[in-house]
Amino acid sequence: MNKNRQRTSSIGIICYYTGYIVLIVAASMSIPVVTSILFKEWNPMLDFMITGAITTIIALSLILFGAEFKDSRPNFGWKHGFVIAALSWIILTFLCAIPYRLSGHTNSFLDACFDVMSGFTTTGLVLTQDLDHLSNGLNMWRHMLTFIGGQGMIVLALSFLTREIGGAYKMYVGEGKDIELVPNVKGTARYIWKISLVYLIIGTVTLWIIGMFIGLKPVSAFLHALYMFESSWSTGGFAPYTQNIMYYHSILYESVTMIIFILGSFNFGLHYAIWQGKRKEIVKNIETQSFFITSFIACMLALIGLSKLNVYPNAVAGFRRIIFNVVSAHTTTGLGSIYARQFALEWGDFGVLIMIIVMLIGGSACSTAGGFKGLRVGIVFKGLIMDVKKLLTSERSMKVYKYHHIKDHMLEDGLIKSSATIICCYMVTFTIGTMIGTFYGYTLADSAFESASVTGNVGLSIGVTTPSMPNFMKIYYIIAMYLGRLEFLSVFALIGYILGGVKKTCIRLLQRA
Image 1 (spheres, rainbow, N blue to C red):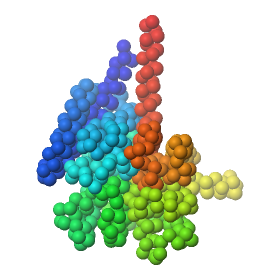
Image 2: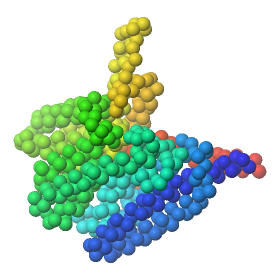
Image 3: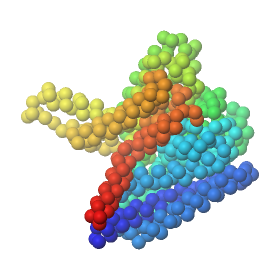
Image 4: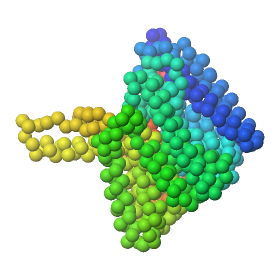
């Protein structure tokens, strides 16, 4: 009986906090409702009101079921935090897909779920059709999803807490973030949103001015600025038109968005340190060192490789087509200044290979970016150097090895192994995706490019991701985006929790029989 009570308590804790997270996202649906009203888009308004009502009912049901267990702090373990994070993403993917499907711009509910997962994970691949004629309400929702997902829906929920709760940090870590800007998680969550909102104001105003300068009407320029900031800062890759960043025909617009998505790919801890006056952190931090070194090498190799092919006639074209796309891939943003098939037809195998590598590396940990992160690359590289030095150094003169990430940390074998393990998980996911693509008849280069894009939460496409691609590929890409964003551990915890529950249920049934 005690075990049954403990099991019920465990489920109750998960339901309560999952419901709370779902309720916060349900409340955010009021923004596209208001947007639809302002632009007199009555059908989209109704779509979001229906979705908001359904989401709220489900959220309140979960909260009521788990209410008596919400303060069971001694029972709130790491498994609960991880399961809540993983489960919240699944539930919200289905619920947030409803307005997509009701809009008539997706062929199926699977396509709608694909686009929502793509938004939440800041991937940016799109199956929504006729982007150029979406309602303002749905466009607002699309870009809100990537903005919420970039900061983290759990981070959003925690920022509304009125008091600190025992399992907050465990849920926070479950979403793939582990840095604490201030001593408590609630304060950290609020600071993350404070940083993002400050940049939102600055970035949106800047792009708004540029938008009017290049000929957009004030209201249209403002909406485009808001959408493109949300997409760039969250390294999401969504855009209000099919042409993506090319719609604006402006090197100034492209340059500003590139600055925004580079900033968005940096660790929130780095932003906080700079705000605290520690500007040298930009140079000293292992993540920024890793990012700038790999970006420089990738850009130089791409420029050299494509110059041999005479693809672009001058330096300006080279910057707009090569540097922009390589950095967009490396930060896992996915905004593209060329069309999808141009990667395959113009860049050649060497250019495609560079893009695959930087898409997998990605941006910084605890940022809006995806990939297996510059921090892990830096740690594994330093670990390799450490092992080489150990082989060449006598035991008596062995020293302590460190790396700098906001502060000095010990470079320990356990950390190196855990970093290498996560990188291996990404590589396995990427390899499986590549194999599935080739199984369905796509070329090896195309399959690898698209698989790297979904695994690293990038969003650049070589032309594989279309509404007509096989449903099994869509499902696998959804799973790959989900795994990549939550960095595997939370999803593994959810699977383990479900399997554990099924196992115990089967044992009880067998005992009764």
